[in-house]
Image (cartoon, rainbow, N blue to C red; front, side, top):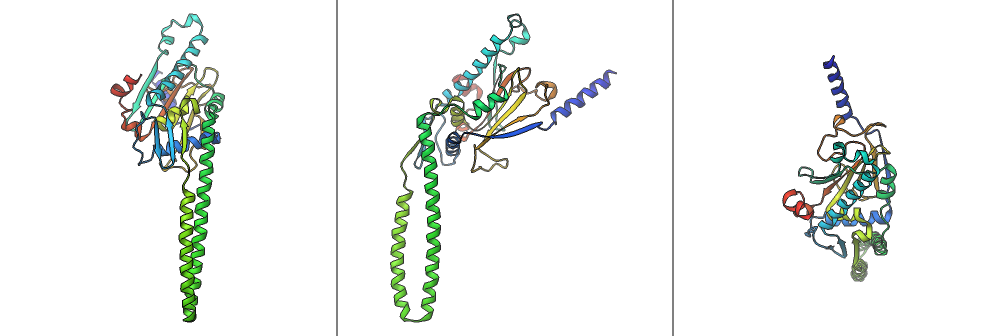
Length: 335
């Protein structure tokens, strides 16, 4: 009898591990914030960028990104963990606070994965509901005036560059049409050769002047993008400093377990031109189920029980080079 029960329980555990997402929805992120994140992360993930996450800024071409230090970025995340644990502590009845089942939840777990180049921070605090994920993380904090101006400047510059490229293509087409007309005139008569040669000289002179004008049009003013906690909020400031993507698994006592994903890359690993335009919220389990070791959440950094939050950041190249995967020598001294 016990053997049958064990077999049934193992089968149910395997089914829960292999269970696909019950529900998944994508939501748009606020446009100014999406623009800032896209530019900041793409610059930080560029091969030509040689800065480190401890440096206050990164400059490429005419764009300068101002970031928090790696220590400040970690402290912003850890601070949110303490706030969640304090909220869970005071919402718990005093008679349950001294129990061992409650005491072991008063900790923050930090782990790294060298294969996936990720950093995970887990707390067993109050967690977040679906509404919290949409209204807090999806909408983001209120942007500062400097951040809004930077987003507008980036949008204007991208439009100008697109217009310049379109104008250049039109001019190239006109130039090719002129050359075809000149060739036809050369084959017709010798007298037209002299006229066509003079016209081509004038056309070449005009093309040189137009190319000079194009080069001057592409010269833009310096754009400063503030990606600090006071400008875009602590969570997204930490993402700009440390990573290129983030995944959050959270369970509130009053809601189901949800997974929040925000990434600048497609599934095939190539950069998405419309990155950070949307975020995804998925519910991997049926209603009423809690994450536990019995249904696949048995890793050190997994959320288990009635509440908690796990933040997993895929580190950028600069963070990896700075040793952010080294828990003993780098992360522990920072904290």
